[in-house]
Image (cartoon, rainbow, N blue to C red; front, side, top):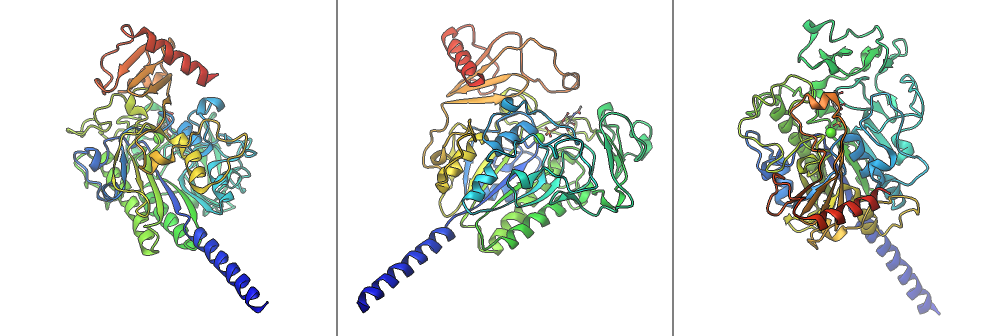
Length: 500
Ligand code: NG6
Ligand code: CA
């Protein structure tokens, strides 16, 4: 009898120990999401005129992907897909104004909710741009719908973009440093008195802009939209990278005992591109290059914090971007004039807003020393797949009605296989579809939005069908649709099937 008890005790102890061991072995997950960073804006992918030593180190010790994509060529849609595992078109997700309601259905499972199920502590630090609240936001109260309801235990946010009001941070859905005697009002329609308007006071501006960004001036920079109040809460653009890195590393320090998921969503390298003095002239490309260096520094802060806590080895870092590069997005920072030989999108055609490859083909690195061997991979992957792939990694069952477009490609993400997706949707002002080496672009006979037409960007849509063979023609220069009617037919049919 005695020995029976002993053996049972031993079994219990061993299983507790195993449980603790298996829990301890769950990797931390950190998604470093850079804004508007092009495929070749990092050293390892060929950047000229700016150095990115911290990102390059991730690539050297991790897996560098050459054909991994954001789901869309703009921000809100890509972020929507990343967090919901659903294509943006299903919810008409498009670039949001700074006072738009939350576009994620809080009744449905999301990537962070799935990770919470797996026992993770979840946090988002940085740019949100998925809307907040469910009607007109009252910035003077806790915002009732936001990251918490989407599955993040902790949040520290730039609510929309750097070029939209309100230019304040939100911590756990409350404006940081708000003086109740100086309440905030925001307007995206009627001009409201409050902060001076850029078009009336050009003499107050640090950086001039196009007419679309001449609303409220805060910190010497005019933005989209109008704003009043909240003086003590205004952010200083030049310190954003420090503030965000500190919040992100605080989260890591605080959650070091748990498996955690950190969605670190940088403001850089979105406009206004105003680098901190520490980084001014650290590149040969002017402000756009300087904020690339600044972004790289932020990446270094994260890896250093993980190292300090002895967590780097078993943390799965995904470094990537939300959409392709843009030189002129409204602010006059001479990105075109100072570019030199640098090619932000590498050999790929297009940019932010464009359905051509550079619109969605993102710099993408997976770094997980414990499990992922350093190297390169040309697997065709979309960020929409991270949801299902991470669920597979953690053996979590995805809710029935969640993540309809997310495919499990864990083996490809971890470098065990070079095979990713068969078909991959690229969303922009029209649809692109990849099938192996083939790239199909659906024709669209509609005027280009005025502000895009004015810019350097070719959104990529034409009245005629386009088909490219990316193996022979990675730069999408020779439209071979006419010679390949069967492929065109197959691609259009598949696209219809996806869009149904
Ligand atoms: C556009 C803005 C642009 C930028 C972009 C969002 C105009 C004319 N342009 O609407 O400045 O803010 O939205 O960029 O309003 S993104 O990376 O968040 O998608
Ligand atoms: Ca973006």
